[in-house]
Length: 266
Image (cartoon, rainbow, N blue to C red):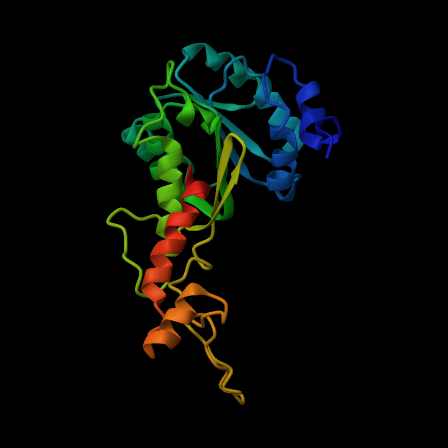
């Protein structure tokens, strides 16, 4: 999809004030957010900058949407006269978010285009995910900062991108028998999508269930297990026959294959 043909880019071009976006973002916006257009939703944007994106989102979502802008800069209060809800606050403050959600309740979409530091992005995600409605999303922009040394002090063990990878582990821990995380959001986050420079957390409590096996109790053909079989031309098959042993060397093969896979993790 050419970004110039997207609905969000057309809304961007109509904006009354300056805004800066990356061209790859517009097709992502359209894909994720078109279901919210012309509906009575609450959309929260963290990081107002020059205000242009506030008008962009109003153009895109329509008049039914409540658009809330959050920024540290008190100058953003000027946009209240256009009908936007404007709050001056710190996205890295848990207390700020407690007061925010006490006032507004659960919201539909949160777009984090704020300060982009690890701390700001992680505190925002932790505070906001439990307060997003089912079917809603948290979109964290510009996560490329997790890879940049100058100004952002990354890569780091505690970067936002590593946090999002941890949340992937977290939602997979819903499978029985997998170690659970001490800090978990897996009862809220149904799935995670990763795009270049954007991480998306899809919220659905009903679908975020502990996984369990189900069978249809029909006739089974009792298929044989072939995963551990050795090919007749393999080195280990010849050793097995020579020593007349029952082992298939599964753990040894696992170790050898793990070594071969190292190149894919560089």
